[in-house]
Amino acid sequence: MKLRLVPVLITSLLSAALLFGGWYMYRQFVIQEPLQKIVNSYEGVKSSRITINQDEVALKLDLQPGTNLRELVQHISTEGQSAIGGRTLNLEVVQHSSEVLDEIWDKAMFSVAEAMESRKYTLIPFTLNQLKEQYNGVTATTEIDDKNVYVSLTNGKESKFIILPRKPETMGVWNNA
Image (cartoon, rainbow, N blue to C red; front, top):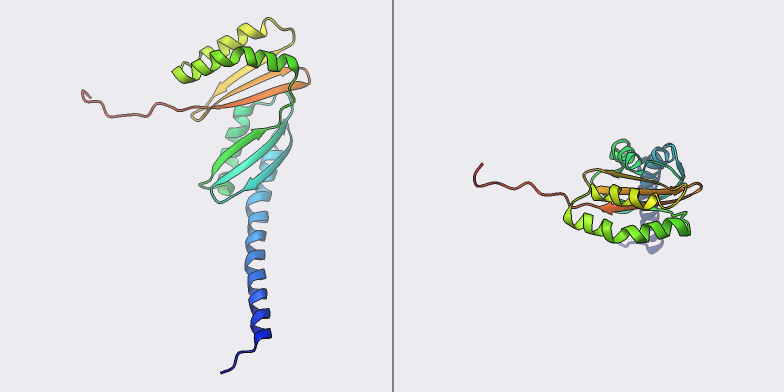
């Protein structure tokens, strides 16, 4: 039996193109496009860019000032669960900050870091509220869920969004229970 080289190569190339093309089409139309629609349908999202790897879904978001970041993350996690699957969700927010917002965050950073390390999360809004009283027109919102602390600083058209990862207490077994 003699194999001819040209038909074997053509068959191999067509099979590879069909296999990888089908995988690309599946990823584009079954995973990425529905997730893109879910993200862009949320009020306050100007634009988004999604990168899907085997282990993670990376979202780069451009948000309008005043967008509720915690609710957006919850919306993406629940509505996009079929597309995300078992992958981790990583968010990056495009910053439209100003010198005033950066100055507030710089002044608050030490207290915020201390609150995160000591797990006294109620100190974060207290610190930001004290600092924002020194500046006119600045609003600061702080929200929390089981994975992150979300800080939003807004000054008219400028905004700064910070996502701080939490390490919640793990439940252990008590000897006297």
